[in-house]
Image (cartoon, rainbow, N blue to C red; front, side, top):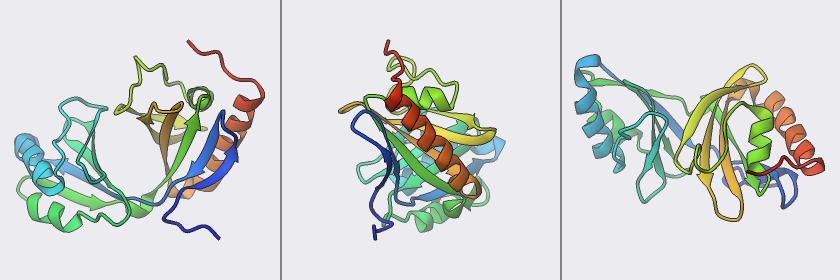
Length: 193
C-alpha cells in the first residue's frame, strides 16, 4: 500500500498522467482593509516567502512554502507535508491585522503531468494553458464539473505539470472526471500551439 506522503499514480502514461499528491498544510489568511501592508510583512515573517504583488501569482521560500494571492485582502499559504507553519502564522498574523483559518482538511491535491497535461487541463476547464498565458507560478480559480477548484502551473520540465486543488467532499467524483480527461487526451491528443 502506498504511503500518503508520496504521490500515487492514478491513471495515464508518459503522455499524460493523473497523480494523487500528498496532503499539504493549507491556511487561508485575510487582512483587514487598513492592514494589507502589515499583513504582507507578517506573511513574509511567518513563511519566509514574500507575499505576491500580483493576484493569481505564487511566491515560495526555499523549503516548499507557497503563498498565493487569491484577492486584494486574501491569501492561501500552502506548506509541504512535514512543514507546519501554523505557529509562525499565529505569531505574526495578529488579530489587529488579520485572521488565519486552517483549511488543511478542506482540499485534496491532484496533479496532471506530461506532454499532454495542458490538453487535460483544457478538457477540464476553460483556462488558456499556453506557456505565455499560464506560466509556472500562475494559478486560476475555475470550475470543473460545476465545482470550484484552483489550478496551479507547477512545472515545465519534461512536459507541463498542474496541481489541481479540489474540495475534499468532491475529490472522489472529480477524480473520476479527471481520469476520464486523461484517457481522452491519450486517445486523441489536443493540438499544441
